[in-house]
Image (cartoon, rainbow, N blue to C red; front, side, top):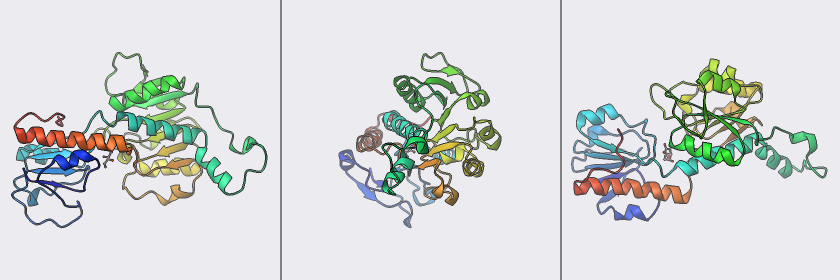
Length: 299
Ligand code: 8YV
């Protein structure tokens, strides 16, 4: 099966594709009727150039940039990479919580600038404890649950919200607005869908407690970015942000703020996880080629 991939995806599994050609997503593409498989990292699909396309294997759990309606119309199967990136993403959410709550980046900057004058930084970087805080998880799916499990080790009180309340020992259910008002730290773990786009709007951001820490490793579009920037510029809340509405562009106002920690969409960015994602991408393609059901089809 002829496959186009938008990059050479990391790890040895990629070499098991016997007829793969790397064509960057931004590169012009002539009509390629012989191509049956496409590997993307949540990138737009040039359907008109690929009339013979039968399967799209998305490198990532989120597939919000893949037009599923167009895929259904054309009978194209879509797969993603759920599960294998839960730990890495949950770890990064904790890294951002810790960095933001404990002012790790500010401390690093202070040391590098020669501002560490006495035996310890004393009041200059005093902040709130993470342990014992209340964590609000928006979306208790695979990644949200991995965050909740880690939260037990940090002795956090854990709340969650999502469309439907479930029976779980991991966290206590709250309506979204109540969770936002009650949590010291809020972390987003819902997919980007028409229902979640703009879910955290200006009003909901205003409900956050003074000094609350807002963490986003999901998608920038889930939040009203202008309203978030305004809250951060005011200094009322703190944030750890791995995702943005128009990546790789980050609102310029954020670049100088001490109360924000910024990372460049690193959620799944460990060597092990990225290789496992490629493994799953390739296994989905190979299964499809054999005529077997794909391992992780998108519903
Ligand atoms: C990226 C992600 O897709 O899985 C997701 O939804 O956002 C990430 O894993 C991946 O880094 C490739 O862009």
